[in-house]
Each structure stands twice: as C-alpha cells, then as structure tokens.
Image 1 (cartoon, rainbow, N blue to C red):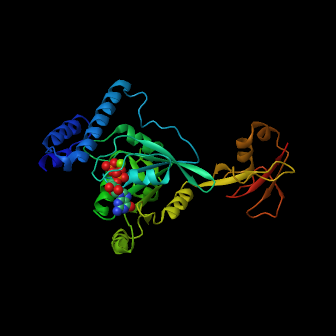
Image 2 (image 1 turned 90 degrees about the horizontal axis):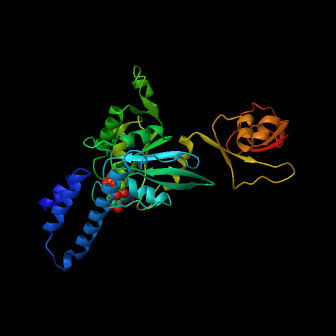
Image 3 (image 1 turned 180 degrees about the horizontal axis):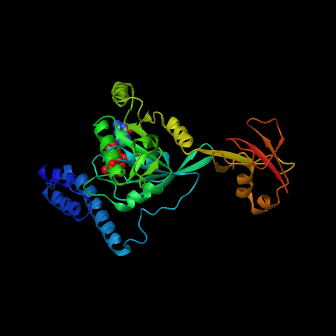
Length: 319
Ligand SMILES: Nc1nc2c(ncn2[C@@H]2O[C@H](COP(=O)(O)OP(=O)(O)OP(=O)(O)O)[C@@H](O)[C@H]2O)c(=O)[nH]1
Ligand SMILES: [Mg+2]
C-alpha cells in the first residue's frame, strides 16, 4: 500500500516510472493479482516508450502542437482524475486512456465531436499540476478557442476549480468573463471558459451540485454533467457551440437546393463578403448579387455585401 501511494503521488516522468517499478515488485504474485500486475506492466512499458519518444523527438513535433480541425478547438483541462479523458472518449472518436487513479494522462489527445452537422475539436490534456507544468500545454491552451474546466463533483470541486484557475493565471491565462479583474495586465490571454461539474451521475448528487452552485454564485458559467450516465451531454454540446461564437451558413447554388448537411462555419458577425470569400475567391472578387433566406429577411431577399449573416441562413451568390 505504501508503494502504491508513492506511485500515485509520483510526478510524471522518471519519478513515476521508478515508483511504478517499485510498486510492481511489491505486489505479491498470485492469481488474485494477475490482472493488476498485467495492467501495471503494460502501463510501465507504455510510460517507458513514451519517455523514450519524448527524448528522441525533442521539442519540434511535440504532442501538444495540435493542428486546428473542424469548427473550433476546445481544450479540456483540470485537476487529476476528474474525468477529462472520459469526457473526450465519450464525446469524440478519440480513445484516451481512462483509469481510476490520478495522472493517467501524459499527453494531449485530440478528437472530433459531432455537434449537429458540424464537428468541433476536443483535446484531452494531462492534469494541470503546479509541481509539473508543461509549458507546451499552456501554449496549447493559449491558442485554443475555448477552455472546458472539469471538476469532480464527488471530491473537492471548489478546490479543483481554484487550483486550476490559479495555475492558469500564473501562466497568464484568465477566463474571458473575468477580464475586468485584470485591468493592468497587458500580457494576460483571456479565454472563454466553461466549468463542468462532472460525476453528477443521478439525483443522488444533485444536492451536491446545488451546494456547489450556491457557493460559486453566478460568478462562473457552470454546467453539471455525467460522463458515465450521459447526463446533460447534449446541453454541453450546445453550450460549446454557443461559446465558440460561430454561425453555420449554407450555400445555395442558383436554381438548386442548398446542401443542408454541409454548412460553412463563420465567426458570428460575418457578412456576405466574408461568406463569399469562404466559398470561393471568384465569388469574393466578382460578386454581383446575393440573396438570403433566413433570419430578419423575407425569403430570397436581395442583400448588400455588408449584410450580417446569422446561424442557419441560406445564401445564394451570383457573379
Ligand atoms: N461516477 C463517475 N465516474 C466518472 C465520471 N467520469 C469519469 N469517471 C471516472 O473517474 C476516473 C477518472 O477518469 P479519467 O477520465 O481517467 O480522469 P482524468 O481527469 O482524465 O484523469 P488524469 O488523466 O489522471 O488527469 C475513472 O475511474 C472514470 O471512470 C462520471 O461522470 N461519473
Ligand atoms: Mg486523463
């Protein structure tokens, strides 16, 4: 048990590998421990090969340098064991390892999450830990469009929230909705952020959530979810979509129906000109007329180049 404790508390890297070797050798060998020992041996060899790969590749092609794909890049961050990997594994095509002990995840793993007819990139990350801060992870967070800060409703959610925010802040990242708290900090990067109170599996934990909500007041955008039972995961997808501040616009070729399964994704506030630029250079340069079906216009209304588009609009461009 002592060896196990040391293993769990060990920091990622050589220290963790050494602690795991010690833990493995301390487990008595009999049938009852076969599976555990097999699991740990697999884990050990994985850790060793990852450490090896890290040494070889150096800084250039770090696992934290992840290309943007889909309609937005969203990072899932938080303390150890709160369910970050489980969330990414549930919502995307990726399969990061999920386990019931802390410091399971060492690297960043991207996956694509379908939200209606678009795809949003979700990235699983290692736990944010003051003792072992990965600068490249912080760069990844700085480049992202949205932070999902996960806490574990069944352990110490407030502590986890405060710790995570403090670590981010120490590295000049702060929630966008608290921007006015940092008036004199020009180097701060502000990011939209949503707090997910995970492990709110059923009615039994609803009261815990109410208490958390009361303690936090309305200072934090907060959503209770359960990765295990799927509670509120649809609401989460919707909330992510809304916070990315994007719209979906459909192209209607003249005389034909628009393809409603293939939207163009634009920033909120985009105009007909922005849309034309996305569809094709030719449209951007030679655009003569544009007609819109959708928000605030009558069907097929002729609009100007600087007409602001809305989510769900259908646009016909003519050159
Ligand atoms: N009851 C319950 N357990 C959950 C839920 N989500 C995750 N877990 C469990 O919590 C444990 C940790 O899950 P992970 O996804 O590995 O957590 P993590 O945040 O990625 O952990 P690290 O990579 O170590 O930082 C696992 O045993 C999961 O099965 C949930 O919604 N409800
Ligand atoms: Mg993980």
